[in-house]
Image (cartoon, rainbow over the protein chains, first blue to last red):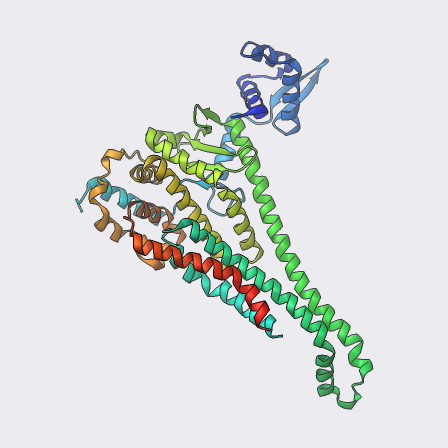
Length: 122
Length: 329
């Protein structure tokens, strides 16, 4: 993991960990306990995440209050739907270690496993 | 006219007759790199021949069209056909319509290619980005974990690219198998296999129904898998790769010690579809064929001969369009 994207990940995870809306100041106070970081860095990171459609924000007095657009579970489910789609359903170039298999291929593979595991039993 | 006909004939032959032959040579993944080179060379060769053919055709039309239209015109209208008739409107219309048709077809193909590859890149980047944000980093691996009971492991290109594992995959893989899976996915990313897949899929979308590109895209993807398997086998050993394939594929834990790999080959290999050349390329047997390939013992002389044949084919295919354009005229 590298660079600025790291911080975006950390900020997203912390926003998800909060039940309600969170301000830049609150997240800055949390992060400052972990590592040296500038307030403006946290602010621009959250602004980026808002611009990229990951965070919603509402003006509350002088500050913005941020909430995640969707929960972490919702994003995971969406990613899995795309990843597990039948071949050709998605245009993303996902290289699966083992591609989605039809019933026949699964059966052949199960048979291979039985033979390999059971030696010459057949 | 002759160079154009020769080039078009060659492009058609390469596009329709070559794929089954090439699939036989490359299907078993004996020489992955040369196999990839042969497929890509064949695709480039067909496209180049078609391009040179079109160019040559337009040259002929420009040079000989007046006499051609005059002959057609005279045979229909006899003496009523004067130079005024066949020189002006017919000439312009004929050339214009021909050029328009060919250009329209080319534009449609290019547009389809562009749309497919652009969407592929955008969707991939969005997926990688979302996976890196929503996933839990797996320490020391650079991979992220997403919660799902179905075992799956994949990589997706982006800025940066992502390697994704499901919790289901972590449940069925032991440490060595996980390392093999990660080596496989890293090989895809460092080998830029996704770029090959993106381009060949784009060509298949641009020229639907042309076997060289539709089947070629599938074969290139298969060869990329085999190439990544080889990288994983170098890092973790073939038995571990086999165990990992079986674990993810059957969704059960497969302790490497449970596999009696030393005794298996003859009885097992006869059962796998990989032995039948016809069934081999069927996409549905991709995973059993990869298992078979990992277990097969190498046959140095035959493999070297096959590699040599593929290298010769790749070079000949690359050179052919230019040779035809130069000598057919």
